[in-house]
Length: 272
Image (cartoon, helix red, strand yellow):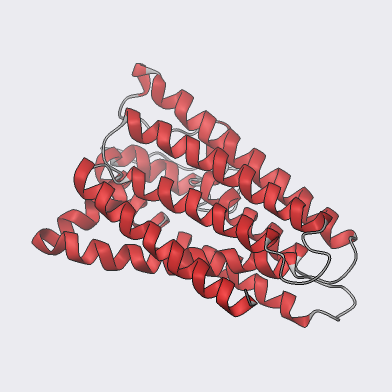
């Protein structure tokens, strides 16, 4: 199979997976299954891109490393989303879309999820570009792995802290401002963005012999735009503002939206 044929097949497969996610959402009413299917499917595509024997000598050590990273990311995040979906109700972001789209929700959701499939295919290309990097293993691989470890560990810690906060009945209706959540309103999104930055770093050939590797940075750029401007922060923050009111506004006034940093001091709480 040629590389173009592999990419075309992978893109079609991911769009097909999102069509299945659409059916699951309509059948169960739980939108969390959408994100779980997207995560596992995107991870599987990254693995396929890394291990496909396109040229002699492949897969090599870097290919296996990239495939392992993708598998760890998909299994960790996918299992977390599945567990959360089985315990809770609908995802507030999709609930907002259902309310906004009304009776047209099923049709518009199908098209929306096809766009998500194409987005996943674009992200998976960063793994493909990293795997096709002809440079010998070196500093960029070490840096990429270090960024990935920090990203995967940070995202798992953020998810764990939020889950522990929600399990305590005393925190019902409150805003989690503990641990990483005191430094960022969305630390899980920040570390998710870092995952794709790691693959892009590994696609770079410092000698310049693989200029195509620079295209891998489209993945973290796209993920940053998606998380901060489209389907990440905006709908979730609107939901939190409605459901938490002044507590959320006070939290938002002192806490960074995305990039973790120390919380602001001397911020006067809002008076009711």
